[in-house]
Length: 257
Figure 1: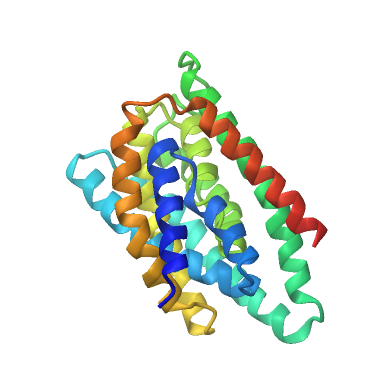
Figure 2 (figure 1 turned 120 degrees about the horizontal axis):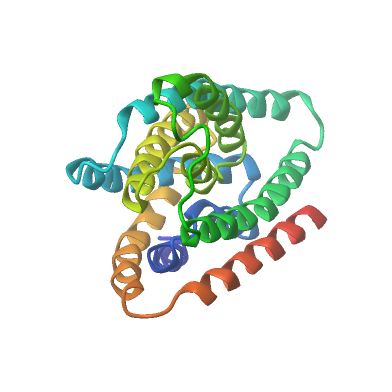
């Protein structure tokens, strides 16, 4: 019985609930440090994220804070490219020597990128709203760039499991004039579809540890609830910056392995 994974899940869930920092950026490097093979760490993280996002999607759907046309256009691009990324990863593992090392390097670079995106997202959310040419267009008129962005970012998520929230949130904030709740709701609903598709693709190749997913969820559910309760009572901005720095350091360490 892997209670240490439950403790990891509790810590990650607590920090996600408290600060809003993406769970994959926290969990994936921890799984690698625990000695889990990179491809399995990515696949396991995707399935874990898919399950955790079910509840958030349901809640935001009830609150009517999900823009389904936006979700659809992003998913048209992201789901096929995410599945292609998983298939590419599997091919590389079968045919390329040192595949684990290559994936670790990619994960390290993405882990350095994501905290910078998180900080940019925090800055944009505090900035006074201003319109750009995209925000004055209808969702249908923006379908082509949304599909292209979905394809590019979906490939990255399928390959690394990281960025299904923060990267797409930045795109939503740039292309649309949405409230904070609408950005979160639309982002989570799309992330649920993307991580589910990529997670199932990983399961088809056997690169998911379902037992690990179970023990992580056992800790993360109460962790998220506790962190979310405390987020309204304690200042979290400095903690968010500190976590971002730690993620960058872990990315650098993984690159150097």
